[in-house]
Every structure is written in C-alpha cells, then in structure tokens.
Length: 398
Image (cartoon, rainbow, N blue to C red; front, side):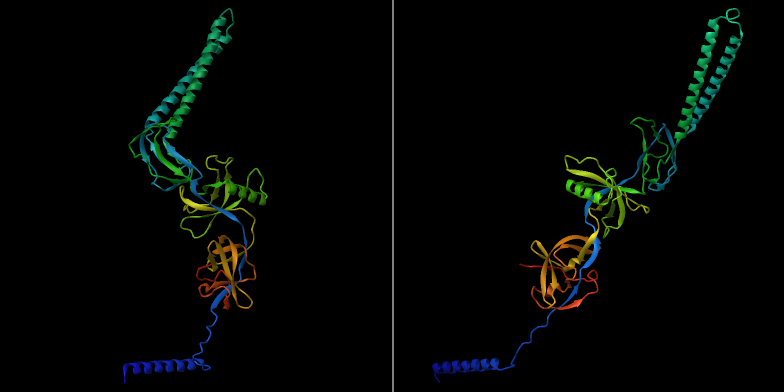
C-alpha cells in the first residue's frame, strides 16, 4: 500500500472513533455529573447587650504621694533601719544620725533655762523689796525703774532660753528620720558613716525616696474633641459643673492584660487646654492593694462617653472586608447567603459592636465563611450563641 493510501485510511479511522465517542456522550445517563451539595455553615443571632460608647487613652501611673527623705540636721549617719525596696508604714524609722552632739546641746539648753529662771527670780524679789520702801525717802524712783527693767530683761532671757531648749529638742528628734507616708521605699543613697548635710537649704543630702502604693493615680491627656465628649458624658451622669464628673467610672488595661480589667474613677480634669498641643490633662484613681501597679508604668484607660444602650455584637471572625467597607454574611429564609455592609464599633467582652447595618433577627454566618460566595445556597447549622462560635477571617472582593 502506498503512503498516500495509508494516510487516508488512518484519517478515516480517527473520524469514526470521534463519531462513536460523540454518540456515547449523547446517550442518556452516560457520565452525568451530580451537583455538589450546598456547603455547611454555622449561623447565630447577634448578641444583644447594654454597651456604652467610650474613648481610650494612653498614659502613665503616678504615685498619689512621693516624698524625698532628706536630713534636717547635719551629722554622721549611724544607722539604717530598712531593706532597699521594702514597704514601710508611716512613722517607721528609716535613718539615724549620730545623736550625741545634739544630746549635749540639749543639756546645755536646759542649763541655760535654769540660769535664766534663777535670774528672773532674783529680779522679781529685788523689785518687790524696792516697791515696799517709801518712794522719795528711802529709795528713788529711778532705782525702782531700774529694777523693773531688770525683771523684764530676766523674763525675756527665760523666754529666749526656752526657745533654744525647744530647738535643741527638735534637733535631737530630727536625728531619727521616719517615714512621712506609707509606701515603698527606694534604695539608700548614702551608706552608714557618711556625713550628711541637713537644714532647709538646697544642698541637703538626699537619703532615699518613698512612693505611696495604694491607691495609685493614672495620668493621661485627651484632645479637645474627646474632652467635649467627656463633658457630654458628665452631663448624662447628672454630675454638677463643680466636680466635672469626678465620679465617672474608668477601666484600665496594662500591656500584658487581654482586657480592661482594672476599675477606677476619674478624680481630676485640668482647668485649661494646653495651647501648644491642644490637649487637656486628666487623671484617674485605682486601687492597688497588691502593689502591681507601679509609678511610671504605661497603660490604656477607657472612659465612658455615653450612657449604656442596647447594641448588637458579633465575633470579629464573622466580619469580612471589601476594600474599605466591612460586611457580614446573612442567611435568608431560602438558605441563600448575601452580604450586609455594617459599621463597626469597639470590642466588648471579645465581641465586636455593630453600630448600623444589622438586625437583631439576622442569621449571621460565624463559621465557614471561606466556603461561601454571595448568592450561594448553604446548609445552615444554628450555633448556641454568637460569642461561643469561631471561624475564619474572610476578606471580601469586588
């Protein structure tokens, strides 16, 4: 057989095979693919809860009281009565300056008082004898005046020596330095045996510092818009203009806290807005019985700016993103999912507040978001609560 005839025969065989295959595809029931089942998703109603709008600020803790312990008399440091960093009660002994020079000065002051009192007693008796004599015959008026003056000088001397005695007693008392407040003391700045300088001047020796522990304050700044929201919250609480909402509650979160677990209240708002920064300083007070909150520590404070009102909440995992818009998938009565665009609020107890775009009776998809598309049919399974459901985070597309 020639090559040309072989090629024609081969082409004919291929045409017959293709024709037979087409006939088989057209046969009823041949290779008919079944439609995939509708994907299963978990749905839940939004959680309804009383929620108050709030603002959050970053700030630092400061001690309610902070005292620098400085010597009030000069002398050699003889004793230290504390361990660095311990809690000390008010009135506890901290340092002792060598008291012996001041004890000697006190004894000398006592002796001076006795001498002055003896001089006063003599002047009084001398004046009494002069007054018993007949003026103008036995004694002159000048002599009487001199003895009156001597008595007054003696009285003044007694007063001066008693003041010196009181000062000597104070100086001796100042050799024992005690804690002026209850709190945590820092480390000692001077060791035993060093000469410390006391007095009221600017060159006195700093021995240690004491910072109060419980309660503790938290200082922060708010901008002018936040300050106006704060004032509205004050008015909503029916607080008077005098105290400016000093009882307004506040909650605080540390760097390692998962939520705002520390409860306190606003206790101060400054009287002017800083012109350079446009902010105003606020302060809150918190209990600190365990001493965990430390001055200088960072934190975030949450201040309510409205009265509590009912709000709808869903898990963050149920929220999708479409460019700048946020949405949730809602299952209709026909088991078809469609997106609803929503406006988000803050996170409360692990759930996201939805401020608009959602109804309380909507069935929101909280699990299985990656398996669905808008307009698709699904097989919904009801979850117990929205807060107990978890799912994947979905990012929407155009």
